[in-house]
Amino acid sequence: MNILVFGPNGSGKGTQGAIIQKKYNMPHIESGAIFRKNIGGGTELGMKAKEYIDRGDLVPDNITIPMILDRLQEADCKQGWILDGFPRNKVQAETLAKALTDAKMPLDYVVEIVLPRDVAKLRITGRRLCVNDNNHPNHIAFDAIKPVEKDGKLVCRVCGGALNTRADDQDDVAIDKRHDIYYDDNTGTMAAVNVFKAIGGKTKVISVDGKASIDAVSASIMKDLV
Image (tube, rainbow, N blue to C red; front, side):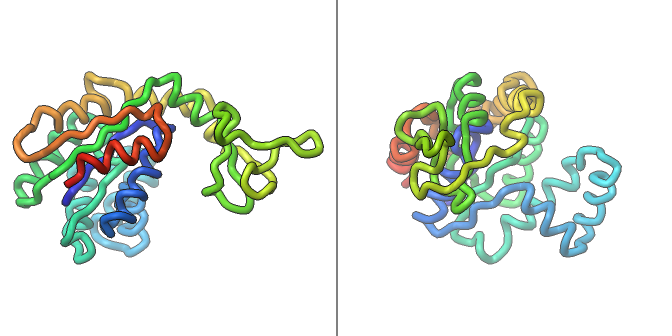
């Protein structure tokens, strides 16, 4: 099965993609990794993309989408794929939808993790990263995974290791900029979600409440993936 995953920064989109990947043994493909692979490998599309990136410009869709399609047609994607991080706006969604149709590549599911903007921001700013293992969940805003205090400092609730924060998690301007794009339902990512909702047919949209726990969100998604 082929799956697109949408969710704002802070929604746990990457976590849910990894859970789906593990259960169904499908590649979890992130658009940034496709760029890095093409640029690092010196492909024709990668070199074209690098010219734009080096100038600080956005890579146009006529380069980005062929790179994505090439990746989705590789051998490890024969039994299905999970794509996240693209499309990010309405035009990209319309172009990708047409490209998938032209390539006779069905889109089976669109998973949308719905989360209010204020909750998404709190999840980002409250994250704490364990120096021993980034997969140890620690968050100052949620009692179930709050760090513990030791000698006047907060430490990992799992292993007692020191905690760090990502610089971009504490940058209000950067967070708001990313969320401005995602929550824009006229031309942004929410508009992209609506493009796929309108397609209908064999594409099934699964919208889940992102405020729930990781396990509850996963259960909501899994019950509709068949």
